[in-house]
Length: 308
Image 1 (cartoon, rainbow, N blue to C red):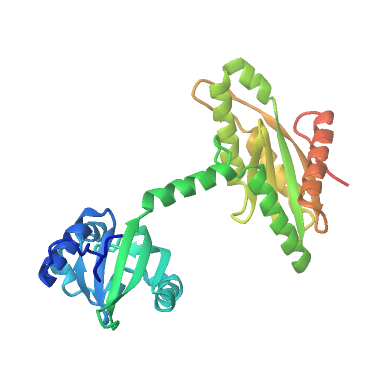
Image 2 (cartoon, rainbow, N blue to C red):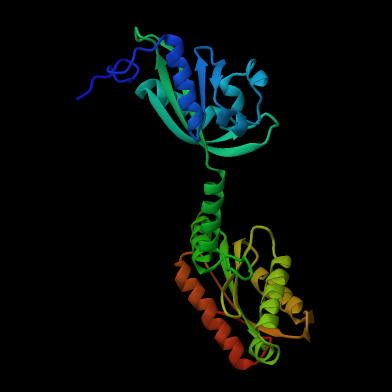
């Protein structure tokens, strides 16, 4: 096994001066894709590679009066940043995903590694900061997460997200003595539109219905698409027992207005089933509203039935 010296260089190589070692380490830091900076014990930045400057939109002159703390997000200072620094002091190295600030004030997501820097005698003389820009990765993760919980056509919550919100609403309702209402909506005449004008017009109609349903609700309410021409509205914190039926009437009036699409102007209606509850499961409440909707549909178009 070959011996290495204190800086990790092979002992068989020609000896390097301290200045030579510094130059070589600087060249190495310039070759890595991460931003690398060294701060002293007072947090002043004493070295930064080109990647660090580029990530943070800085010039070398700007860093002459900069501290490492200048590039952390103030909103994260008392939480994630302090945790990172604490881990570094305890373990010698700390890692965290944080929001970094550029010189112009804009922000980016980063994976940060902070390491203690000691001299030959073991005395702490500063810290080494390595920054990896993960903005693209975080954006893709957010997009995938949203795609898993939302309908791709209308961007409404899907069944999975609806059930999650319904479970939360029922838990809150049991504490505040309110009720939860579910309105199950099935469009009347959608198949005729789809068959007559094609799926492109049908998709436009579904998106138009989604917009109208959203426009009739409070910010606290949820409208979801389960698939096909089925939508569900979740009303949370209901204290007026007449509110669900009044909301259903408002939704029905909005859907009855003509839809002016690219290649056609169409009229539809909807059948709506209503179910309310507090001490029940999300799936049982959704099933009750679904059953009431089918009862409404069996009577004729544009009917509203409330589950007993």
